Image (cartoon, rainbow, N blue to C red; front, side, top):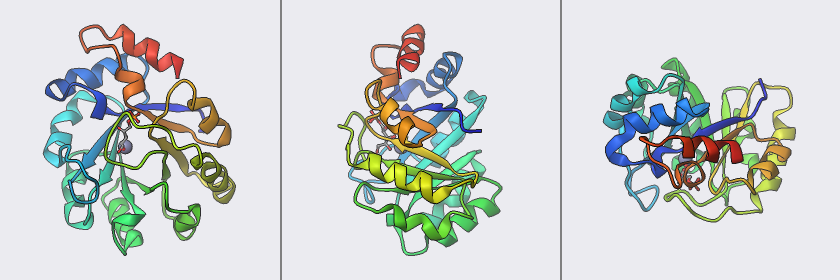
Amino acid sequence: DRSIKIAPSILAADFANFGAECAAVEGQGADWIHVDVMDGHFVPNISFGAATCAAIRPHIKGVMDVHLMISPVDPFLDGFIAAGADVITAHVEAGPHIHRTVQAIRAGGVRAGVALNPGTPAEAVRGLLDEIDLVCVMTVNPGFGGQAFIESQVTKIQQLREMIGDRPVHIEVDGGVDARTAPLVAAAGADVLVAGSAVFRGGTAAAPEVYGENIRRI
Ligand code: DX5
Ligand code: ZN
């Protein structure tokens, strides 16, 4: 279905309290939980890996959406599959064999996503559209939360929506999504909106009502 889903990124949550943070945003209406994995090599920041994903899994009732900002990808896929990911997204820029990566994700029984950095054209996923479940349009350069939304990417979302046609492929948007930019990307054709700072700002797992207000504002 094409209803808009909100996927809070726990990169903006309390790292010492992931279980409660996931439960808090789910209780406040989050649709998916977005989990940002960074390796300090593909992106200039390190977050956490498969062991953390496995630890978080029992605290998520719905979809665990794992965004891999790592290179290489393939040697680590089995760990994220075993951790219980529902969606695994890899970057086309992470290596020469994105099609092989997508095949390996699906062979593990997990939905496959492909992410595009802001400098990468929509055209880079054309050959994959019949083999994937999601395209993630990065609207910031990956590596950090709280960066400014890159407006030029809205055109890319429109191009992808047209390219995808009636295939069952989600368009996810990641980076700088807030109450101002969410309507722009939704109108362009996005249906999964990742938001870190815009969701977690001002709240805690112990006072989750703020998360609910933030989610409803997006
Ligand atoms: C960026 C991550 C995003 C990030 C979004 O590398 O992939 O998921 O956490 O954070 P905000 O919503 O604060 O831009
Ligand atoms: Zn992300």
